[in-house]
Image (cartoon, rainbow, N blue to C red):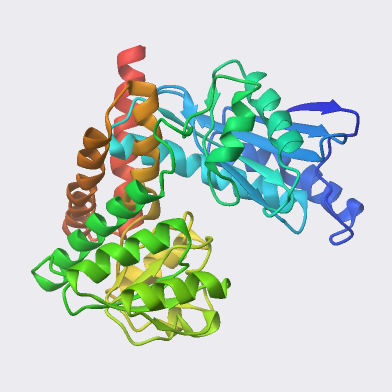
Length: 376
């Protein structure tokens, strides 16, 4: 891990609970084990007190190309939580790029802070300097808690940023298109037809991606049940798409055909799995499984799970357009092909009798190993 500091100490302590001593012990017991668990190449920590910036960038694997992954800004309870999040997210980006057939590696960054902060320029310019210090090994883009406007601030400090205004822009519509297509592939496997007309779909999270997914589903004639911690977002999809709103805590137990997690991760866990009354879990959120064993539990319950990094690759495809010089039509075509990717994953899962996340991992790892052999 490479730590860099400007004007303040760069550390992994982020609040009164857990204590500094507790976090220090956790790191002493397993810092490098965390990094080695999924063979991360590099993790960089940077702090700039004057700018109000604390960020972590994780580069998981660059076998297929430079690491590309968005910048997430979130109010983590402590910086150890932020570190674990960025490690999981960056690994997912490696597998996402591999399954999507892109010449990219996997990386991710997190900024510890309020995603609704007003004075954003100093924070994101500091982040831009952090990205620039990695000399092109990592390319960033927007993610949860960040926007196209934030990427413009980053662009003032580095060229290694995509998702800019006037270029690929907001990746949400392309992400939603890919999720919609992947959901149809799941329906094909579950019901023998990929039609979603008349299917009841519960959508958790009606932000940028969730909104566009609801639009696709509404246009095909699906019945929508939605929840979000932001009431304005919920009201919008209720008004525009005739959705039924439920409280966030009630979305898991809603009687439906398909559950689409489109907010934060770890929502498939010991508490929520017993509540599910669906045939399919297919949504845009990253790291939906709190632990891998939860994917095995869904498999044992005959609930089809679309591995998140396979189905939500549309956003990565969208920003890759800037790297490769694609037009929007080609990006849409590539995102629509997520249908075939998900079908391949589901068929391998069925043939080998393994959980879908394991099938997706195997396919991605085959792509990476083959690329490594060619480089050797």
